Length: 404
Image (tube, rainbow, N blue to C red; front, side, top):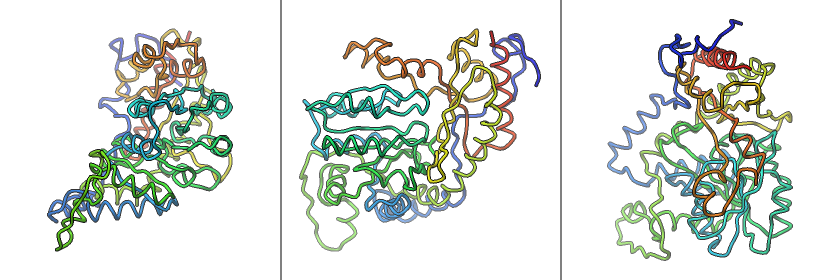
């Protein structure tokens, strides 16, 4: 391949590998979604209603859960999951450090204490051995996060939870379509939460879904998501009889609308197609990066019944091989019009958690090291094969220029 030097980089006034910017995680929205949204707008009912209910049913069927509750974000779902379990002040919830802040923030919101444990350096997921070591008499739940779309070791986590009578709340924001030993994520644990943010594997613009097999929790989640009322608006106005709703808990405004669900219905029907394209492009990336100096990849499942949903395609840099930091390398890729991103800095290095709990970076050395050396590349079904080649060329150009 072509040799590059620092002066060739667009960051140093060289010519970028592409003339237009390739965004990270651009959604693919087709005419079916657009027509469904228009139909909803013309129907006269745009709030939570029949299409949201249909989307919930189809999503539950897809993942193999008994119930699915649509909400306005995965964060809302995680918050409500803690609430229906009566988790609050004095309780502890164990979770990972390599995740978006929302995973831990919701624990703070209910007044409980997040107990961080370090990750496995290869999978980048929470290490079950560290979970077991962190359990105390105050521990009430475990929140594993399927980083990038690769399933956590759920058998080990479920065994620990069963042994200590703990509830497992999965953060599956990255894991729509992920499979673990033949089961879809969403049908494995007590409660599972998904995200439909624009850059996710499927989108409702903003939105989320909670899945469970527990009928009592399903009922309570529906009450909590809409002000604590025991009758939602669609049920009240879809009948010709007066229906009185009562606030049975101090609930929240977390419901999904039928406009969002209109997108979700067709995005869900296309999800397997979207995942196939992600897998096709990831294989091209894997082959190109496998022998690249200073780079390693998150492992792919080797068992046929497991599937990585490939929400994120990450490179883990061996920074001693480069004359630049990870942040400088991302800046250089952005200058080449390649929409690289950062997922994530370890949570214990963020000011809120660092200051509140007095953490030092080396308190969790693996998550800290990964959080300072990881970057994400564009990967979505909206990309063309030409876009894929541009990403490969951009990464080769930048890393080649920065090799020590």
